[in-house]
Amino acid sequence: ILNVEQSPQSLHVQEGDSTNFTCSFPSSNFYALHWYRWETAKSPEALFVMTLNGDEKKKGRISATLNTKEGYSYLYIKGSQPEDSATYLCAFKAFNKFYFGSGTKLNVKP
Amino acid sequence: GAVVSQHPSWVICKSGTSVKIECRSLDFQATTMFWYRQFPKQSLMLMATSNEGSKATYEQGVEKDKFLINHASLTLSTLTVTSAHPEDSSFYICSARDVTGTSGYNEQFFGPGTRLTVL
Image 1 (cartoon, each protein chain N blue to C red):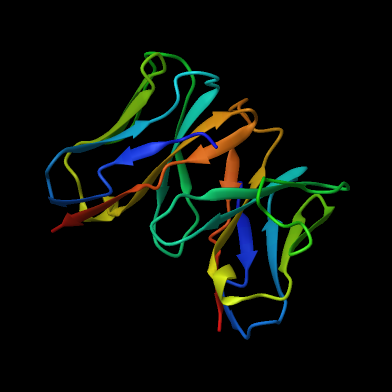
Image 2: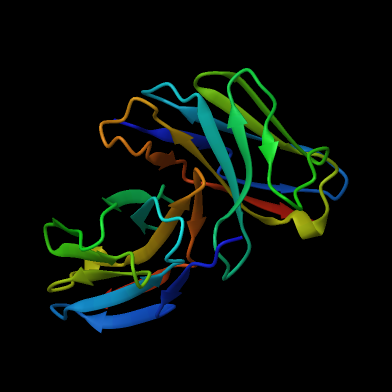
């Protein structure tokens, strides 16, 4: 089992704050790193697929970076809104399987 | 597009009974589906990989006779928890891989999950 760690476990921010969290994964046998947004009672929604060292992806106010050599990815949310409240999961893909972190639960207060 | 449904969304059953969970890809064909389990405050853990028309591949430590997986069509996979016990209480979630996805990295699309409580 490959170890994927996410930090922090939970985060409480005020509306308008910018925030970021981390996904750490093994630096060997890397194939891809996926980020998902997961709201309660809904399906995890794919945010980004990152494959190359140095990748930066952006979708609206959310962006992500990737460092495969040191084994980490950052997810940034600029100007958090209450609707950003969700659990953010990262998944490390290797050997044709996904290995998930335990997620960062974000709560944005109005 | 790429919607996966899962049924039921929650189920409560008595110890010793069997429970079947369905996973359907609604708008695409999925030759491969995955079943995950999540215990409280833990990560999603892959239980098994289900390939249409063939036997599922189980991860180490997952009892194949207890967690029966059937993937009889390109849009449906089922997980049956046989003789369920309280320790099987967990959140079960499936995903389906769209092999024709434009991402080229065979993204997985998830169902919303099933909360199983065994009394």
